[in-house]
Image (cartoon, rainbow, N blue to C red):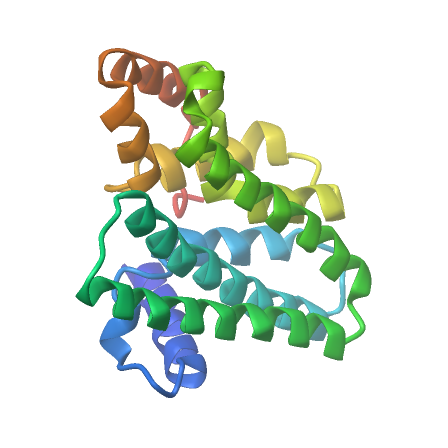
Length: 223
């Protein structure tokens, strides 16, 4: 319980400090989960950089994860062709998502973490390509391949963090935990829902296979 309270305090402090001035705190409900924050913290503890850079990178990654998650809501509502009053809400989401991504770029540039910046920019590009594949090119891929795209959407920043700093046990220890919690055990994934709506017969079976493939020996927060 103490760990969850600590992570929630990090989340609340972050939102209090960095929330967009035109929004209420409620705008961030459901954004930035316990598991997302904890995974960034735990992975960064394995990285050999000075503490100040570690802290700045942590904050920068939270900003980018928020930006990606908020922009997800826009992409998915546009895909569903939802209009009228929600289009105004989507304009606000775009504004806030861009606001948080600008913090990401600013922080890494300010502290001269340019290798990190360029590395993550490449992964962000891949994440956005995965989103477009899920939304517009499903017929060209197998269900298994589409699930891998969903995994990349939810876990891309963690994969990039690992590849940048060559975290040795990421593939065997950390990635199974991260994929399990952030994709298949997250309670709700709108990206999985998109696949379910279009591949209802095959999707549940393939999800079970992928979930079993990534089944970790323990879960995030256990160690």
